[in-house]
Length: 278
Image 1 (cartoon, rainbow, N blue to C red):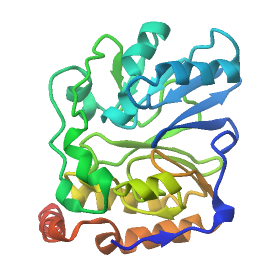
Image 2 (cartoon, rainbow, N blue to C red; image 1 turned 45 degrees about the vertical axis):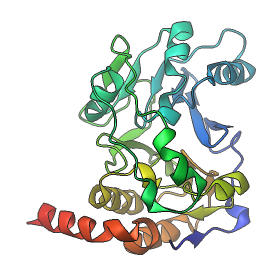
Image 3 (tube, rainbow, N blue to C red; image 1 turned 60 degrees about the vertical axis):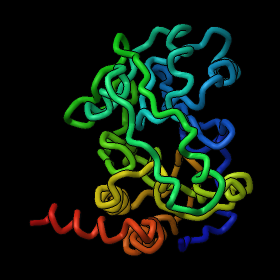
């Protein structure tokens, strides 16, 4: 697959992404905290067994015994919800997610199996071993409001970005054009173990082995490109901050088929797009 290289000066440290926005990399996935004078909110919950690391990070940042107002999920894949049950046992806070993610967060449904045939490296090859859920946090999870406002994340708006999952969401703050991407796209080649290890900054589509609907994934990247974000905080890869980001993201959207969609899935995506437009 093709890629869009990003210059090194655009890399933003995870501990200072934007005003009130910090992140923590856990192996190959990022979690984030959005804070304001009234408190803080955790975005995504990382890999299994990472609850202690997330709590220690929060306490280093906000003090001993710190707890968020809420946890907000981009989606329910295992690398974004792995620690959520352990965190909720300590924090007892609400969790917000898109209504279409609810079956995967309330113990009712597993995600579709991955597609290791997308190629690209070890991460794809190993994908059949990744947990598909579901988790059951029925007593805590609540739907994000239909108007896209995010409880306990003032100034941020939910952007519905399906494709990678049915209820995938990204989060946008218009004030400084910051975008929490989730897995709508990546700033590393998530199919390749070596690329994930190197973290070379470049724009890619969503993790291909776990993206079942390429037509929706393409439309979601087009939607995000139209927002012209200047700060990117992705689920996979390094955060980015640059005036060139809108043009680069527009390029990803314009060339999404050849950059992101595996060759064997491109015809299916075109057929699906045609059906959606008819």
